[in-house]
Length: 220
Image 1 (tube, rainbow, N blue to C red):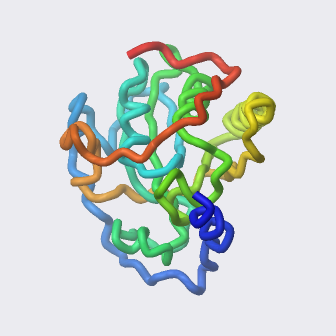
Image 2: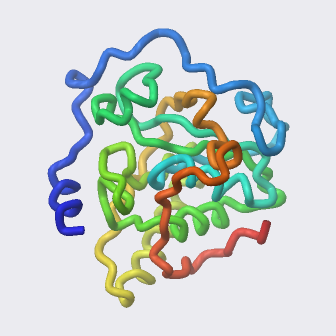
């Protein structure tokens, strides 16, 4: 664990001029969600809202959210970087600046953004900076990417509340980045709903065991 702590302190997101060039062609994520059959790229039902989170390897992160009632569709991809239309191998080099993220389209009449935030905080350790467990790199950083001021206010309040809950349990400072949602690039089709297609596949996601003082997401 000490080695990973040392590595994580040295890792940083590259500047735009230092990033890989990428490409003009979009990555094809496939058409429909493997679990519920809904279209990954829409059209989405009227009145539904979108959330965007990064919490480590996106295989396990996506599964957290597709299991929540009220979530209409999820997809994995890349955000908060600089390379246009990056692929998985490029992101894993750390040369694109992107984070592995999950986009969540949900019905606000069935599940609140606060509930999604609670699932986000409780599903990973947000104090580990550029890693989650043994997964080390800029693409594993904790991040909340907001689409409006309402999401920003809710995310900031939740971050402060969870920090207050973590300190008595011996955890350090939350390193989660909280920024405007930038361009989201869909990941390749084989990464979409990976753990549904590969039930025995790798999942490095692990929470702190500390409850988040927000409304818990409804049971699946």
